[in-house]
Length: 333
Image 1: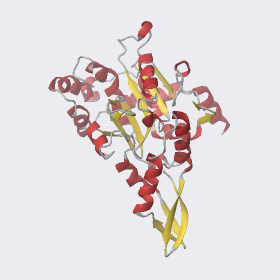
Image 2 (image 1 turned 120 degrees about the vertical axis):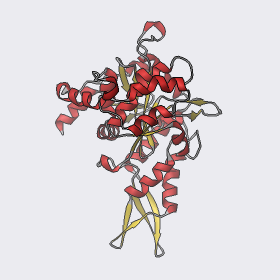
Image 3 (image 1 turned 45 degrees about the horizontal axis):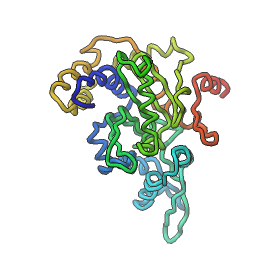
Image 4 (image 1 turned 90 degrees about the horizontal axis):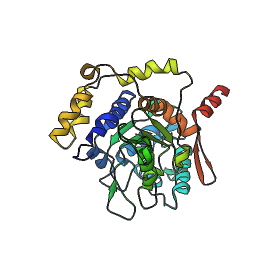
């Protein structure tokens, strides 16, 4: 976000998205903290400081009937395999990393002179509560072959791995040709995936959202513009009260301070702060299309389910299920 009047975009779309994600169980990371957790390396999109801790928390191996921890070298090797994957195109690299994330890897450990490979997982797909979820905004990533950066509006992390990216736009602006501004958000996503941009973020992403309050679309990595989709919940009447409750959940004082305190100018702080006091400050509001999409796709358990079970690679194309396919499959299980 910059110092021009477009900070209204943050107040209207971006910060409501953050507020809802906090209500859904994500912890907020200010931009400077997200940089620190990457070791100050803007080209690295993985929060290695979080990942290392979670690899230790999620993984143990058994040797002669005893449960043991992976040593420091094993954890470092697991991090290296995820973060140092050579880039040879968006989809080929994305597919290899997807396999690593969903299948895990085997890491050698030597105990009493006996070296064996043991399974290690990056995400506990079956038990969402064992993972940690963070969200950050204005997530600065250095472009390929450049020292310039891009800043996706909102990025959601699971165990420090950026699985979802959101671009937010004001609803009162229009894209080229008079289209809804949500298509400007789609265009931004597509631009950022070019080889000379920040594809090294999108090789990890599974869900991409383009939102502008009253319009909201989703896709996955490298999805062409014409295939970005709406999402409709099958039991909308049952789900709507849950969305309403989440969007009106008050922020804690610590959350409110974090969201507004890192904004760079007093004018922005004064403008934004009253809008993030929760229902005690703004009164109740009705859910928007943006809220419904975020609630539908980025609740931790739904995000993991979609990423693990409903993404496929079909040759050079990565696909994610639409809502009709998702609910049809679930009915057969």
